[in-house]
Length: 370
Ligand SMILES: CC(=O)N[C@H]1[C@@H](OP(=O)(O)OP(=O)(O)OC[C@H]2O[C@@H](n3ccc(=O)[nH]c3=O)[C@H](O)[C@@H]2O)O[C@H](CO)[C@@H](O)[C@@H]1O
Image 1: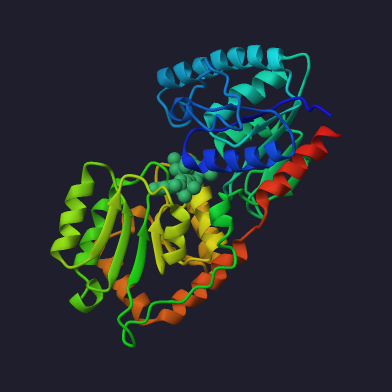
Image 2 (image 1 turned 90 degrees about the vertical axis):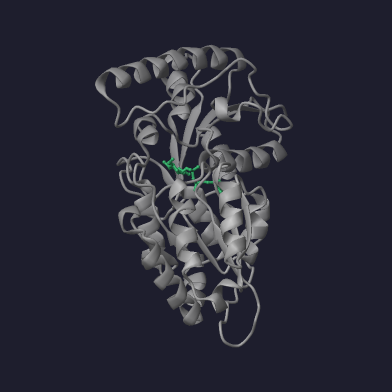
């Protein structure tokens, strides 16, 4: 039987895009033709499973927190994109449109619901512990809402809500049973692996506070450290030299391609608390120090980090309190108390949700049969 196509719409940052790809792979295996609608940041993507509509670029500009004139411009761009999306939907007549959040997911879902005669099924996925701005708008029209977390703030009443979990890349899903052994400072000389990442777009703060903290650790700790750090291109040579000078083994790069291998090695992760990063920490069972992005529209990263901290899987520090002296003390304390790291690694797994891509694809198929 030939299926009608399915449109997957997602903002172009890793947190929205990687789960969209994971679902795409699953639906592709089930025989669905797929169309990916994303923004300029990802327009060259995944040609093998997605027939990317060649001239279609979604708006990526947010609306929240803007000055009135800029807000008006952003809203007009969104509405213009809705018209563009409607044209595409009229041509390819999809059976369903699935949104992964971010403003670029609004035009295809809203366009198909308000402007098209053949109305495809609408499903949204929320990757954070609070419904994001775009999903707040779209949830009113959705036939089903899939969530990563068991409890999600701002969900509308009376809608079909199912926790499918956050789809993660297969190599990360394969870490679901990976054991964790904490580093021991005084009984062996093995490396202590630290992973430092800043979300899909990096974060400047980790290039200042973290190196200062690591340089202030005692020498017997520094020589054991193996650091993998994501940093802005300009900072790569600066941090590489700094770490070398103080005897820290480090690999500094603008983007970590093989996140799975890094998580597998990591004794501790320092980073933001975006939906995908937290889901990956839970899958791999790795303890973390989380510094939520302070400018995130709904403080979704703060809510994600709090959820992980309450589960016992890590420690949240607000950016205003993220200082090198504090981080240095905290790292030394954790390395001296490996049981705390071990406990956090186990606790992180309580938020693990396996086979999310499969569960989400099941939900899509169930909604098609509605
Ligand atoms: C799912 C989701 O809603 N994510 C949030 C996140 O998106 P954002 O995309 O910034 O961050 P996430 O933590 O959600 O995702 C980051 C993704 O990039 C990957 N990665 C990161 C660094 C690297 O070097 N290599 C790499 O592959 C991570 O493994 C992860 O899969 O921040 C936004 C603010 O800007 C929030 O508003 C979003 O709500």
